[in-house]
Amino acid sequence: MISQDVFSVVHSTQTNPQFSDKRIKPTPTMKIQILNNIASEGLAVFPSHYQVGTKIDNPDGLLVRSASIDTELFPSLFAISRAGAGVNNITVDKATNQGICVFNTPGANANAVAELVFIMLGAYARNIHLGLRFFQNLTDLDDAGLNKEVEQKKSQFKGFELAGKTLGVIGLGQIGVRVANGGASREMKVIGFDPYPALANIHTLSPNVSLARSMRELLQEADIISLHVPLNPKTEGLVNQSFLEHLKADAVLINFARGPIVVNRDVLNALDSNKLRFYLTDFPSTTLLNHPKVICTPHLGASTEESEEHCSVMAATQLKNYLELGSITHSVNFPTAESIPKDTIACRLIMINQDIPGMIGFATQVIGRHNINISSYINESNGQIGYNIIDLETSPPQDLIKEIESNKDVIRTRSIFFHSQ
Image (cartoon, rainbow, N blue to C red; front, top):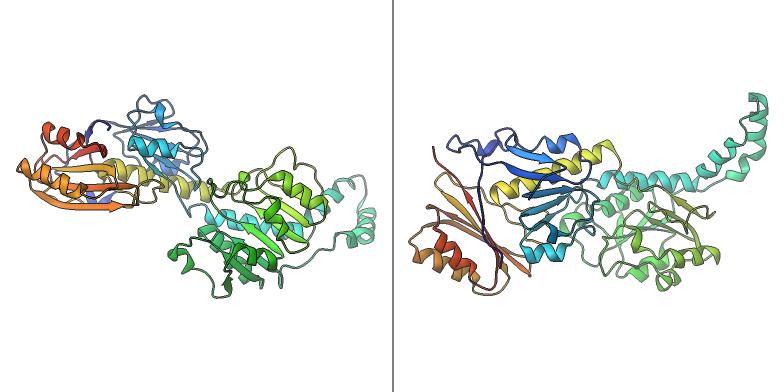
């Protein structure tokens, strides 16, 4: 059980106009540590009373991209917000046990990744990479000689059209749906597969995309397979020898999801035996470089100005809302929970606990014994963690908090105070 952390909050009228109530007093500085380059648009989300920088002692929140984070090194931390979708660089299990909320930004870079998939697929299909290499050896020719060489050699670069080919998309999150819809708009036959699809994403899927009943069914039909699954213990090494044995002959594989999803050795064996026609990836390795059937890009999936801005703003906003209000959206380890505080509340008590029966009754009984009125009570669960937003009309005494914390299934509490002028 982790001890209570208490701080007051102020609401910025620029970044949170619905909470511009003048009854809120200035507050102590909140501290945000930045561990990667974050777009300035995201940093602008934090009000002036926040301390934001790369060298911060005992931060309240972390804003990261690819930096590796061991949450045990941050004992005072409330939350981490990752400007991107993957969180394999963060010790999420440790964070959960510490009562630290971990956010990501799904969908913020989806368009950038989906665009790059088709840029590179198109470049490969039309042999653009070979054509560019061809011109590098013709720099000493004049225009007449260049045109003659082009006309004589251009047949070597004859490619194929995407229209009419079967595209298989594994993983139908926001990126996967965009890739599937992009294939349909290019007159490809598109098959999608996701073992745990989110309805919100499926609802945006083109009616021209069909859903496979199994991954094997997709592999046996697709000319081109594009991977868009998160990296976790179930997906690490997903594309291995067994996976590749089920491919349709002469298939093309695309990985713009995460490098460890693919076992490079097995892919190279499939390429060398002509089981696999070509491999496009955003995750280069020394084993892949200079292979004639591989195109690597230097991890460019989210590297656009627009994507970095969207990710940073979304990450910063989620972190700010959690610190100020205890609100949660897009957390990978805590349930979604949002609530607007009423003018009458003095304190918002957050209780984070193991998701077991009886915790709501326990909290309300403790609060009731101290004669404090509960203005509202919201409880959400993700099957592992119970997250409670309890709005109180009177600030709780310290012995109330200690009584709640004495329960062995309470992981952490926080008190967010609202001070009337």
